Amino acid sequence: MDTREHAKEWERIKGQFDALGVQYFRSKMYVGDYQSLDNPRLVIDRKKDLQEICGNVCQQHERFKAELLRAKEQGIKLVILCEHGADIKSLEDVYFWSNPRKYQIRWKTVNGKRVKDVISDKAVDGNQLYKSLCTIRDRYSVDFVFCQKEETGQKIIEILGGQIDG
Image 1: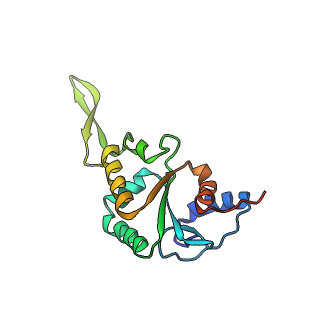
Image 2: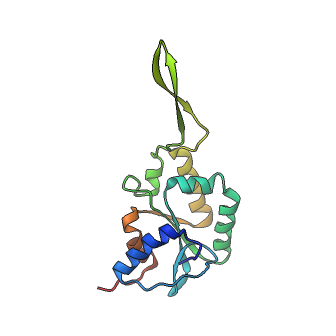
Image 3: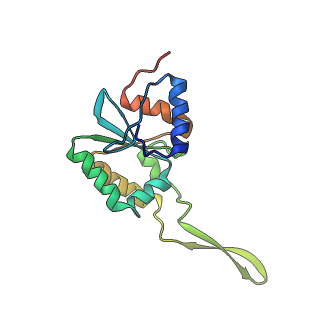
């Protein structure tokens, strides 16, 4: 597990690992957040939700692209594990995602009554994000896996092919 993983998130996942009887240690990783010593060429990069992936793809594009290139150049298979929740189970579901930042809601007065005024923002919508993620998948051989926060530890173990005690 990467030492740069957010402390609050690490505590949550550590609790899941402990409950599953998983042995682990923390170290600074070259790429991603989780890997098994049995297969160091398979790495998981955990994302808390689609909002974080949007930030990586749009605002932090160069940093994110550099990580994708590092993995590809070293022959590392990168799996991006997104903890978005029950409504996103596959890459195809991203297409229908409604980005909460896509629309700004402002209040205005019309004929003496207060009404919502929805103004389109420049934020990425599900269709745009889906296309970007498909390009990343195809160009960098990245897999996208989705789960809920309470199953992250289990999903990490499944992806890395580990055995769980008990």
